[in-house]
Image (cartoon, rainbow, N blue to C red; front, side, top):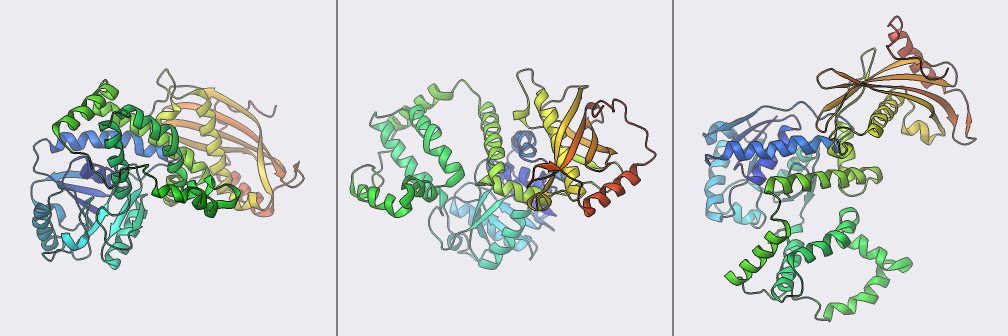
Length: 469
């Protein structure tokens, strides 16, 4: 699969990274002489952040190339994404050429945050709005606006690269999400202009309060809870009358003059000018990865999108000694020394155990039927350092599966093949209803026997034999 990116700025570079890190080949057209450097910096951030969302390895990267020929860039592309500046005459010119040069089957999307499809296609171009959010390589939302069939094809592709396509029902200026952002932005400008709050105080009000709620529940579900046991009707009855109160100035816009620009820019510099843009981007990405990984546990919001995408990622488990873990080490697994904290070595071993259980049939459905394995003993050896961004892999040996017992040995290696730890685990099979040990069912027992037979004759791994003595 090939994606063609037209315009390699922050948004175009983010699109390139999202496709590339999901195994697509990517060609980029951008006449900016600094394009290669700028795109490279976006890709560096993406390689550092995106794999940290997942507990499985992403596909091998596709190939990336920059081209100075538009036809060469979009030729044989399956997806063409325009991310040029927000000038309608420029977009008309670009999309006229894209409609001529791109394959008939290709999705042609525009990253525009303001223009409607009817405006983009005024001169005959075949294009839909595919509006992303920065950073494109992390945030899943894409607003799709335009021809239903075109949008449906786009949605299928976007889900395949871990994104959340939202098909906007009707054309409207600024689509959906940016209309909310514009409302908040206008009110924030007045608060700064009128001396009520600084840029930093406004940001604190968002990130210390409703911003955390919105990340998991959005607007209406948050307000439903605010209504208490009576729900949304009670909330509307209690707070609906406030809509007529002069709480906001949404229909009013402050004069956007040099005085206001200097005021806001000065406060922003005082707030975060001690950090470079690259440092702020990495801080943003680390925080997003941590929050989105937390949301995976409940399947809320963006966490559910990641989980669904993760289940579609391939896993190697056909070998006699199966790969039970293959992932990138996220930034949040590292400590003040800059390497992986000792607790996460055990977490990696636990994840490998979970995967092995899935392979032999002791999966989520098995647990739902009232049976599972409980860990009763672990022995962990720390052999080498692991750093954020390293690829971490586990291969699992079955050392014993007699009756109720399950004896596993995980060898953890870095991407370069260096053995960094071993985790030896002893588990007992349990009836979740009685909370007492019992033999596994026939299907699981037979699967374990097949693994044991496949691994028969292999030498005992070095360091094994520390548990169950």
